[in-house]
Image 1: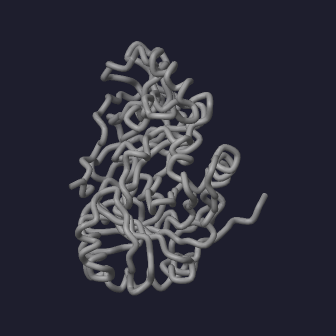
Image 2: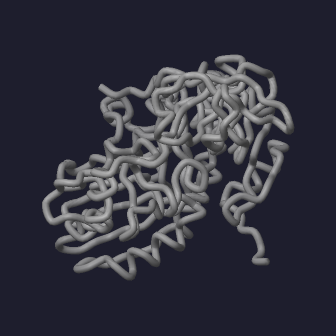
Amino acid sequence: MSELLRTPLFTQHQNLKARIVPFAGYQMPVQYAGVLEEAKQVRTHAGLFDVSHMGQLRVRGKGALEAVNALLTNDLSKTQLGQAQYSLVCNPEGGIIDDVIAYHRGPEEIFICVNASNRAAVFAWFQQHLKGASLEDLSDSLSLLAVQGPRAEEILSECSDPQVAKNLKYYWAAESKVFGEPCYLSRTGYTGEDGFEIYVRNEAAPRIWQSLMELGAPKGLAPIGLGARDTLRLEMGYPLHGHEISTEISPFEAGLNWVVKLKKAGGFMGQPTLQKLFEAGPRKVLRGFAVEDRRMARQGAEIYTPAKVKVGTVTSGTFSPHLHHPIALGFVDASQADAKDFLLKVREELVPMHTRPLPFVPSQAKKK
């Protein structure tokens, strides 16, 4: 078993008495004050996250955009300089290797943020299949901090170029400075709230973290762990690799049709298979559920019809601090796509639950 890694902010988490757990090969803070309290903090004020375990890749050279676009399901050619785009990296069988954010950072540069657990796999995949451009893994030299919540813009405006923070659109990024430190500032996040993600060099990360806490604490900024981050993303219905998406799950089963551009000029890796899967229709569909009980749905829990026929499995579940009851995501057979009422197996009991439209909680991201 390999030794767990630490982000440059590990000492800060220790000083804040965070509960540290293994995650994606790192020792990461799962909570500080408590998952429910931290989730509420982000929805009402602001939260500061260390997500430096995420991977960052850079593709450069003439034809970089075209080279990356051939490996993504979305159409990066439709983006402008400075724009970011959510996309999928699929294998020839149509399975999802990872979901990523690709940034059109320069005329000959694409910057890609990948999930921590898939960093090595995506890098190897790009090494094998990327044509006509150079590839670098910057993950070990960059830290990633996220400020999320309704007061995020106010906080960033006071420590960076206020015009950049205020004018940066949702899913756009810009070269900027935070507390005088050069950074790549992105109006993105994984919470459904307005917010920013800050890419900075490792050496500067502890100072940026501390300065953000000192500036933001009077405005309600608090450190947030991965436990609340998972609760927040689940309230939004956002997929998580290894749960709602994987190499065994197609984008159409995961409800991600909107990021698969089957008619993209030049095609892309997995396009022929995905075309066939689209025409055949999904065998299972992802749904959101509200559980009519205080007991939570856990990953792997079985889903039944009211007639007690097993038709699916839970992929993620939590207690929603904003809805005050358990929620879940899960796959059910396509034949049950229009059904509303189901039963959840909790130990040996069947508990009522029903479908809910996604997201469970309205998004507050600044999309205009």
